[in-house]
Image 1 (tube, rainbow, N blue to C red):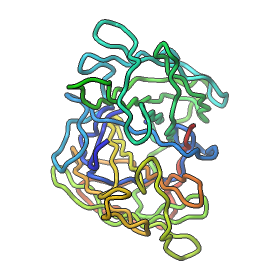
Image 2 (image 1 turned 90 degrees about the horizontal axis):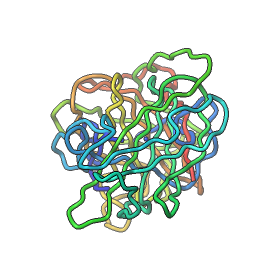
Image 3 (image 1 turned 60 degrees about the vertical axis):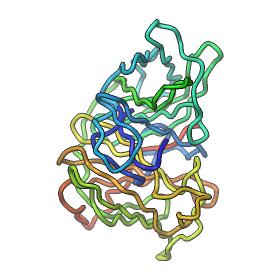
Length: 319
């Protein structure tokens, strides 16, 4: 995936362009959950879709992504449309081409052939996982969604081929059980997760590129030895409240290019597709573990610190 932004699928590319940033609250397997499982060392990368999804990045505003189940001749065929809340299940799906055939050849991007994101409709739960593919093209990954309700599954990938482009396809997933929706956490520029504090400086603006900086601290001191995770020092997924339009971006500069500092600041450039509330999920790696911090921001206005650590998100990473 490009340094820039991507908004589709974990809807295609979020109409907001986040050039290269990543913000996250507490993460759990493929979705943000109350009691997140331990993070694995993998990251699901959502991709931009064409009409509804956008492309990788740059500073231009891409179309909202992850809102379509089919695009560019490819379809996300979700074999597991329902699971039971609180119980682990095997989530299975297949990407099919225009002829209905299962896709078995993909371009590897950020160490993976496909990145998968799962998020609840109320954005309280977030999962970034990496499924495995069988020889017949069927993908699978274990998921354990903490709460009942509606979820969105985002598959970010690029089919192998000379002229293929990155896509982010989305499909609905239901978790059965007693359902009680949660309100979107208030806007805040501070997130706390696993003993770390992450500060966000800047805010996305509709139709205008803006810089977002995230600083990771622990015990009151900036963390200056962040480790690369899936080819970057930070990964950011943005989901628009209301329709869950998806955007995945990477930091300005990547490991090895001499422009990115290991820490404490991770810089991204983003352009929001529209005014409104967004939930940002930042994945970063330190001391061999991946952590996710979550922020609620409003495009068109600075993220106000509510005075409460609303950066905790039910989330996690899969293997």
